[in-house]
Amino acid sequence: MEQKRISAEPVSSTNITPYGELFNTDTAPPAFDSDIFSFWNDASVGDVDAAPVSFGMVVTKPGAPRVPALERHLRTTETLVPIDADITLVLGVPTEGPLPDPTTVRALRVPRGAGVTLHKGTWHYVPLIAENKPARTLVVFRQGTPADDLEIKELGTELGFEYVIS
Image (cartoon, rainbow, N blue to C red; front, side):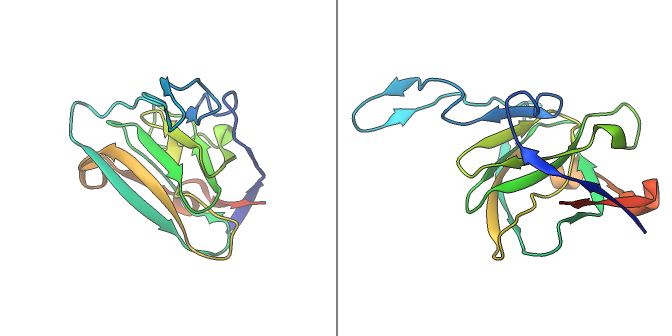
């Protein structure tokens, strides 16, 4: 099967815009700041179609940085916050049709301590890691999303290639 190489680049407020929104403590001043703690309210606001919100966890295992599939959710945003290590997100802009547009796919590195909220319909894959040990990422979206709002496209079958991150 053909492989397409894409280089991972650091995420920024600018390059994430077609796919979602970056948030961290550097992007806005805190809503409350004291000698004891600082608090950022509404650091990122998702849209989950007025449904209960699911807080989940994905554990990425070490291995080859390949992307055999992309998925999307049409009814909810998805927020990803790396806990143990920096992650690389492979992202494609939302499309009207049933397939991702390969010309829009990028690999963006999100540092631990920051987070990303993906727009509804953004094509993505599970967080990838560079470290040689499993790493956790917090996942937030509308409850029930894996059962009723998950569209997965196998890239080899649908487009004839898969991505490999360099």
